[in-house]
Image 1 (cartoon, rainbow, N blue to C red):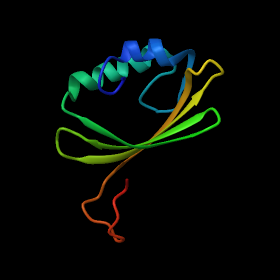
Image 2 (image 1 turned 90 degrees about the horizontal axis):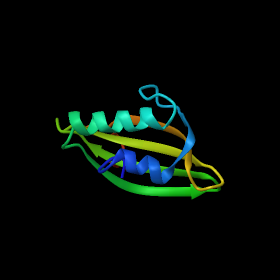
Image 3 (image 1 turned 180 degrees about the horizontal axis):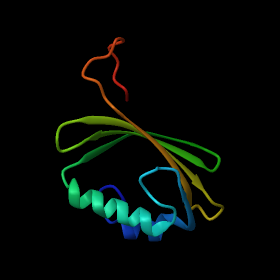
Image 4 (image 1 turned 90 degrees about the vertical axis):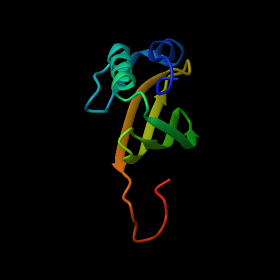
Length: 110
């Protein structure tokens, strides 16, 4: 919902009051999250994100995604979320890597 839809609604439904952000481009708290995704939607409306897999263990969820940006550059992303006892997201980590045109092993990154 935050990536493709309404970041404010996503925060209302899924994010806790105290939100710790480890992405260096986004501040802590719900409002910087909203601001970031609204800006991304304005600047990159044709960006596509495919959710490849999700893994959950305890209060942690990992998402493995394949992103295609409007300029055609592709990225693989790993997002990790920590949830509180109410099931709300309270912490986020991520890593992003550009997908090379060729790999030595012939496998995709996702």
